[in-house]
Image 1 (cartoon, rainbow, N blue to C red):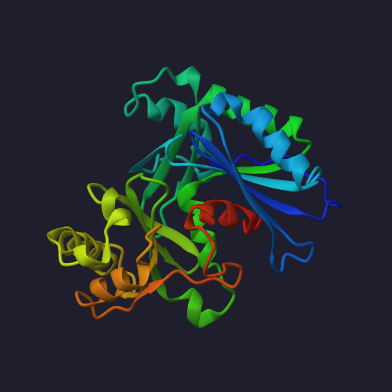
Image 2: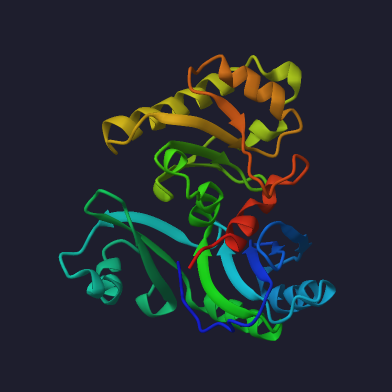
Amino acid sequence: MRIPWLKNRHTQAKLGVFIAKQRVDICALSAGNEAIAVLDSSAFNDVSELINTLSKLISKHNLQAATCHVVLSNQLYQLLQIDKPNVPDDEVSSTLPFIAKEFINEAIDTVVFDYFSVPNQNKINLVYCPKNLVELIITAIQQAKLELVTIGIEELATANLFNTSANDDRKSTQMLIAQQDHQEINLTIIHDNQLYFSRRLRGFSRLRDLQEDQLDTALLDNFSLEIQRSADFVVSQLKLPEVKEINLALPSAILAPLIARLQLNFTIPVTPLKHAFIAENVDTGFLPAIGGALEQL
């Protein structure tokens, strides 16, 4: 969901704010957007505590007046792929409430809708979340004295980690496998700086807890099978070049042995996610906030 707001073009700091059910993360870039200046997190018992929690976090780092890109955890919205309405592009947004009636159980006037296109397909990704949540976020941003630019979603934010101006890199197909806390693992496909495909890999949330002596398990073989199915889908259905790399961003204490074990099942390189802004010791939970800070308008 991308909701544009007027921003102060004289502010310097650029801020990504990731909001989950029980925590908020922030990532502030340096004035030249060349490095991460601040990376911090604060927990709460319920998202209703966001206003007070965010204000304290922003004051702690003196980030008032920063331009802000909010990223919602996938716990807080629904994402559906549907056929694109047969209307001009500039009328798609206005048709969403009418189309959504066929797909959602919530009352239309209690949710906020947005969408983003599916490249090379006559489909759109419909995104919706509770209206009162959006209102709460707007109030929290205002109370923290930030300038809200966009409200986005986790899949699009993490895709920003692959944005590049280099032609060779842009045209490569990248797979990202990421996990937040103990949620289901999310798999995304990025090509030419665009998000093409996203799916939740259900039943693998405990991968993060595996010990090194547990790597010879059917769980990893089943996990590899799901990855391979997605890699095959990229070529057969999305008509993209083969996946160049499988990038892992899992909160595992044994990531290197885990990657080595997975690599036995693939000819495609399996590698930890790398980015110029991300040090080796950075908690992968911060990736959506970092992706939010990297948002290009």
